[in-house]
Length: 122
Image (cartoon, rainbow, N blue to C red):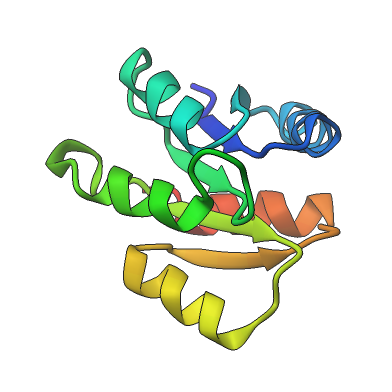
């Protein structure tokens, strides 16, 4: 059975690049355009196998989104990969404290993204 990935990014272009790369690797992809929308989408779906989120987004950024996901006992174990242009060590540390599983810098290599998902998927 194919894994389901929730991709949260405010850039339509980036969401499309993620969707294409992951669907070609056999994953089901559900998309959300920011953290608030990501939480809404999570409410209406089965538990995703992995969540990918950007950091810098309107309404609710990726770090707040991660904290919200982690505050729900039923979703604490979902692996969350941060996919962002940010490479700042302090932001990485904040993401880890919030509950991020891993960090990938954009632009991403589709093969490495797929490998990272397969490594962290429970």
